Length: 291
View 1 (cartoon, rainbow, N blue to C red):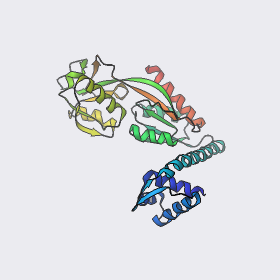
View 2: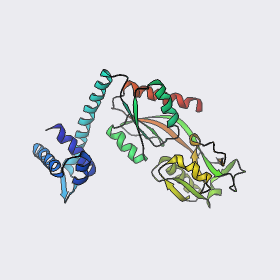
View 3: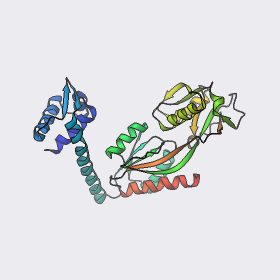
């Protein structure tokens, strides 16, 4: 059994499509198919049910996938440890976020401490983020909501109140607080379903008897303030994402503990480099004055 066979198997297992997997690996479909076939011959069992160019993991494949992921995960951890030993001031920090409003300030502080460490950040839905966490492909996730699972460490760093943002000319702009039911006829802008804050807000609104009506749903939380200012709609915005624009007014929510948990997440078995440990310290220290 070869390392290349395992690497190819993981990609095919995740995509379950020969053409897409070959494109992702930058190899020909015939080369990929032959590599998977040799792996199956080595193991003595088929790993996929084949339907044209589509593949579906069978029972054998599902069992083997967990072991293969674990083996490659451990090899990647070993490579990371060696990189840290040979170049302790270099390296790349892999991050995923669903709660991005505080990230620019956190990264700015981290860069002051570790100017030579690069970072790669992905803005993801909760589902996408959890998949990367389980695979051990990221050092940390800055997430809302918090995630409690067997292989994931979760450290809640801040309880973030969610406010209602309205344009200055809005009928509610002279109020300091509002009950949720008073918003039942409003038009909202927000991120798409699958982002923690959106799902939290929708669930709380349902408990008081209405479903928010969205006229805009996007992937960029930072854009919501500009759309509120343009009077496209009103928005639920966490306090940490509050924008100082003069044409936006923020209201507290009455009679409901409407707040999101911001948590730092990491895989329990992933090797944590000195740079990653320092990033965790920066995150915790950033939120301490806000609590």
